[in-house]
Image 1 (cartoon, rainbow, N blue to C red):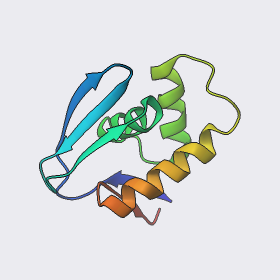
Image 2: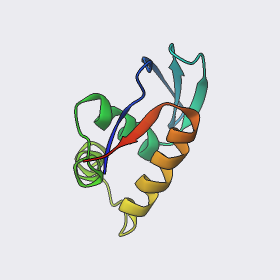
Image 3: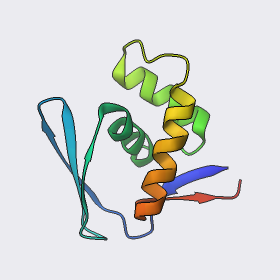
Image 4: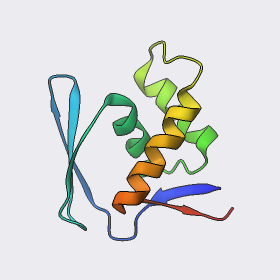
Length: 92
């Protein structure tokens, strides 16, 4: 399975006190995101598409001890973002 930003998604970023606030022009939604969710969206913006690519990019970007279950956290976060329409899963 591959992931990509939703077709109308256009993200604008603001960082406040350890969290990200992300506004999407396409849907008009504003969401608060922790560093892992924000890094996963940034990875998608940069062209990553598989969960393994997104995980590698997030690990590189955050450069911290993220734990063994990062893949599970990312999968859960991507499903949440999919429900909001910000990302979509596509067949490989």
